[in-house]
Image 1 (cartoon, rainbow, N blue to C red):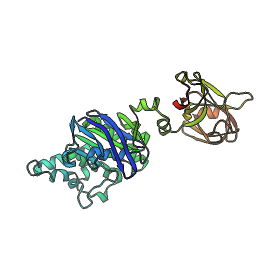
Image 2: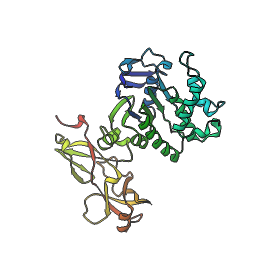
Image 3: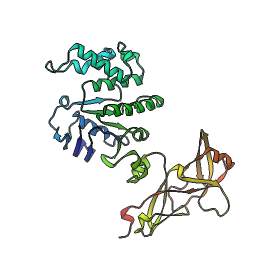
Image 4: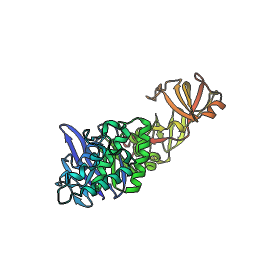
Amino acid sequence: MSIEIRNVSKQFGDFHALRNVNLDVDSGELVALLGPSGCGKTTLLRIIAGLETADAGSILFAGEDTTDVHVRERQVGFVFQHYALFRHMSVFENVAFGLRVKPRSTRPSDAQIKKKVMELLKLVQLDWLADRYPSQLSGGQRQRIALARALAVEPKVLLLDEPFGALDAKVRKELRRWLRRLHDELHVTSIFVTHDQEEALEVADRVVLMNSGRIEQVGSPQEVWDHPASPFVYGFLGDVNLFHGRAHEGEVEVEGVRFNAPEHGGARDAKALAYVRPHDLDVRPYTAGASGIVASIGRAIVVGPIARLELEPLESNPDNPGSGTIIEAQIPAQQFRDLGLKEGDQVVATPRKARVFVEEDWVSP
């Protein structure tokens, strides 16, 4: 089932949770709503579910306006962060609950319920736990049961609010893979909320970046990673170093390093922000006259194939408010060893690649 979100706004007192949000979700798609706490992602999910009412705008399911449709009739499955399983019911009865409370005219027989529940428990690979109670399950098992319960009523739309947020890192990673495989098998239109960028990029077909009640960017995981639409998106998606510099006629100078930025050919000595990911910094031992950012290695963390370096710039640049802060760099561990580097050494860091933003207000017409 496709979902259309049209001009949706929501306020809580003076707080604007959502500001004129528009989004289309295709039938069978798995979409992640990604952003920091308070950006509006959970509010949007609850409005889609019917658990919250928008102040303005509408939600359409398969082209039909659901504004006045009660949450029970929207055919939506909802999975919360904290499982929300019934503690006094067995795993089997938890999954069967939605089927047992259906109106008598549409309620399956006991035999049909048993067949359906056992099929779902097999689907989430927990049929061997049917007689246990939630208190006897691990966090990962409880969340899979919560998902089976949501799927029992054959929802047209599946909504998940931080579904793995309460789990430890290893279990979270396992469940992310499992959810992706499950979605590929069922093709239920699904939207999940997360503040974990790795989770969104790994699981979703498309990622919706939200900030302060607005959508900043929508795209495939590769698109939003390779082509961030704004400084916020660049800063939110993984580790990044921010440098302040100047842009002039398609060239940018940052910390004494010049590189081409043809997309800013119209800039005239404008202030610029240059974002450089740690793996896009070239790090070499310092030699006199070398071009780049001179720094000392404050800390070197060499674990596995990557050496993570915390670089401390040696000179504070008055033109760069970011100077004096730690610069993060990543180089292959073997390269770190081959160069004979160690903590305290002076190095030169040079950006191989940067994403430059020049604010329109700073650019001459």
